[in-house]
Structures are given as structure tokens and as C-alpha cells.
Image (cartoon, rainbow, N blue to C red):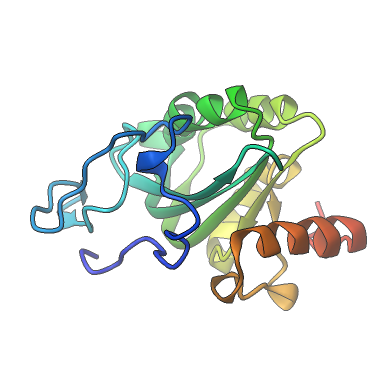
Length: 192
């Protein structure tokens, strides 16, 4: 797991550590010392800690004029034991909401498991985005199944595998426009 880096091709457009509105403003990263781990497995030092024991993230892009951000995740999303959604909501999402971000793109290619507790923080987040949205992309099918079993699809829209976007070849604003136009105007997300 220590070789899995956050997506870095958008660093010319945005870095959270140089963004005064970011929860990771002035964050310093080491390329030599690995200190964060998921269970007994060290992860790459470019991932950001938000007080979860098993889930880390990287804000890949934030646009305060358009009101959206892209967040990549790695690890195990464990609400049951560690209440990850609480820390994610309180430490990251609320900071972004306060800066008028109300459209969230979550990249879950490196999320391995999901363990459910309850949906109160998801519901709160969904209500706070008002006319915005929360979209999850790249999550494995077994995770989507677990999220759906927990009823989370009422708050987070999951990308349909049939219409999956190759987001890595796009610029951040292109991805945003594609999601807004294709998914919400043509309803290509998984049905609730």
C-alpha cells in the first residue's frame, strides 16, 4: 500500500497545502518517512490524515467559484468501529461547505471495505449541500452494494459502472462539467 500515491497529474491546477481555504493549508509532506498506516500497512506520505484510523484522503482539486471539489480516498471506510463519516464530515466537509463548496466528487478506487453504523452524518451532509450533490466514482461493486444496503445511496449518488468516466484523462473542470451535464441531466447514476 505504501506505493499507492494520490493522483498527482492535477497538481499544476491545485494543491491543498497551498490553498488558504483548505483544511490542509501549509501541510508539509515527506517523501522519505512513512508514518501513517492502515492497520499494519504503511501508506504513501502524500495522503492526508483527518483523524480516522483506517481512512485517508487527498483533496485533488477545489474550485470555490464553481463550488466543487474532488477528493480521493484510500483505506477502509469504517463507520462501525471508528465513525469515519463523523471525522470526514466534521474535519473536512464542514470546512469546505463553509467556503461554498456544495458539489463533492469522491474517488473510491482505493477504498477496500465499508462498514456501516448509521446514516445520520450522511443525511446531515446531504441536507447541507442544498442545491449541490455528492457523487461517488470508482468504488468497487461490493462497496456500492454495502452502501446501498445501508441506504447511503439516498445521500450519495454512485456512478453506474456501465457509464463509468475515465476521470484520469480529464482536467478537473472537464470532469465537473461532465458529471453535471451527463449524470444529472441524463440521469446516468445508479437508481436509488
